[in-house]
Image (cartoon, rainbow, N blue to C red; front, side, top):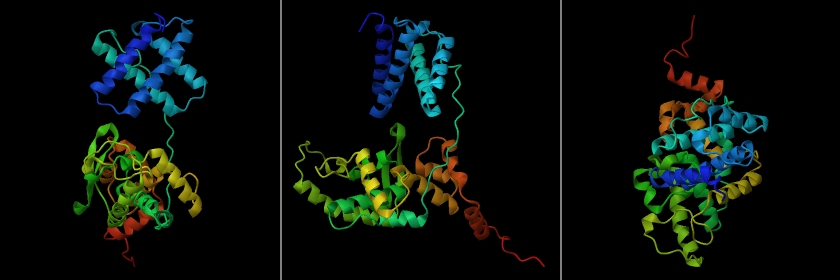
Length: 318
């Protein structure tokens, strides 16, 4: 690392340490911020002819140049917005630490995001998918429990693989879920998912007996609910690969992902009359705006809810 490189690399390193130590940010968040700031570092190094500037000397005009370069390179709007958010946070940290008098990233505006409606399955397609794992061995029971749990509680795939035995409050029909930003919530879980979980837990012991897991002993309450064949915690990527197999077997659209089941959870609740704020709480969304994308339900579904709910919907006139 050259002396000029230290001008940006050292503040960035301190910022990432701050995120971990004081903001309690997740490893994924820290990795994402690090990659975004590294991309900005490379741009500034090139823009200044190989001489890396001190962060307090960088102007809003230079950052607008960075924004223009990303637009010219046809970066996704979500990527641009995320990188601008990383810069704003970095400079807020700098103002707190005293090496930045102002936040040059503050005047920059995020690109207007196009709204993409989530892809969802019908209730019949969901039922076909949930019934697809064969119950002829421990892994089939595990896979069915995973799919049922995601759909029943509307979990993110990271939330379902993060479940520990102590998070299963099945006698109370609840799961303790750790979501984004390590926010914790209690999620209701339905009878189908509960039954699938009970069946998996009876077969889970077989994995532990046959695996060669070298992990240190942990309390049962802190051990993962969903295991791979080696007896360690299942990863999000493994869940994705598992789902791809069942999607192909069921002949479902290849766009279907673990997150699709979360979309289905919200959309099916909304189409049956659930309130948008209730769905926000169930999904663990911090902002209602994030949840409002699910208000795309069909006119037929809304009409059905109207006819059931409105006292004068079916009154004959004349």
